[in-house]
Length: 272
Image: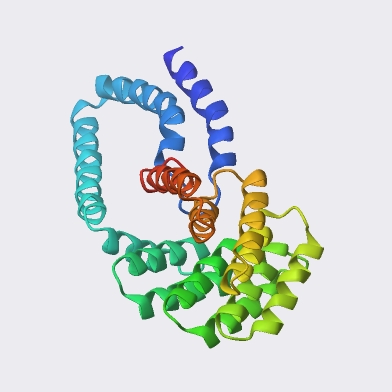
């Protein structure tokens, strides 16, 4: 009965866990609940085997425990070093885009920008339909001043995701920041025509107006973006900058504080 209880616990609990485990690197916490039933079933089998073949059962149990111990020790050393952990995953799953993205983001945090770009480009090439992969790559290029590369990658992102307002906004921003002002503004207007409600497109157009000295117009677009995505920290930051230019320091301080709160939530895993 205990064996059947464990088995009937394990199998039904496994299905939702497997459904949530997208990709080859699912979080182990998804399988905590199913593993309870499996442990009960295996425990019953081990107890029965112990009565009939105690020495063989104990030897097998010792080998299993030793194997798990060695594996845990190896994984513990990886978990202590973020770079080693992500490099291990990228080697283990070379065809999985998210493994390369995670490694690229880690390299970026460590200031290894060339290595970060290489891994992020691999991620985008493996999953060109994933907009996040392109955003990470193009934003890195823009922040490092690699204007031509940012434009090239953003153009590939648009080609891979036709009709995406977010990717058009990315390309328009890359063009604009690369000094291709007329072309950039045209692409940003195209993004808004594609989806007038998209917060990223609204925010990007506001950024273009800000760079042209139209602070009132920029503030208006940043507000529109925040109406549709109140947790967009960058929109709060940029609205604060525009408000300071307009002399509204009190309201600027409010948005600066909100941006800091959202950044803190993101850094600590709150998902903002």
